[in-house]
Amino acid sequence: MTSGNVFADLGFDNSEEELRKAKLAREIRAIIMRRRLTQAKSAQLLAMKQPDISAVVMGEQGKFSIDRPMRCLDRRAYKVDVVVRHKPRKSAPTADAA
Image 1 (spheres, one colour):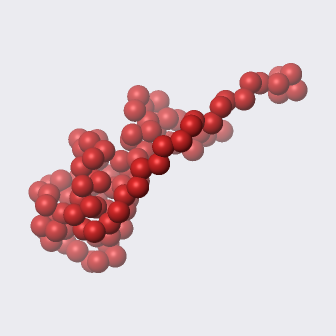
Image 2: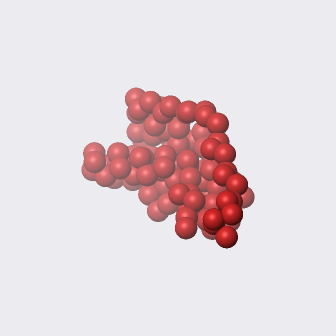
């Protein structure tokens, strides 16, 4: 059974942050693909260096903080919402589950 977060399943320390960065990077890649932008043009539009765009496209977002992809999307008139909610409670195992 998986948790729904591949980073948690793989034992990453900051699994929630890694998942959020991956989702943001996926959106940036989708925008680049949808608009058929080169990495050089993407870098210019997002105010990033071309090697950083390459890292995002290749899924190597480890060197970025969570706010960097958010700022990039904001520069291109995309709105990023952050939602805060309680974590679901883990249910205690029942006698039937044993």
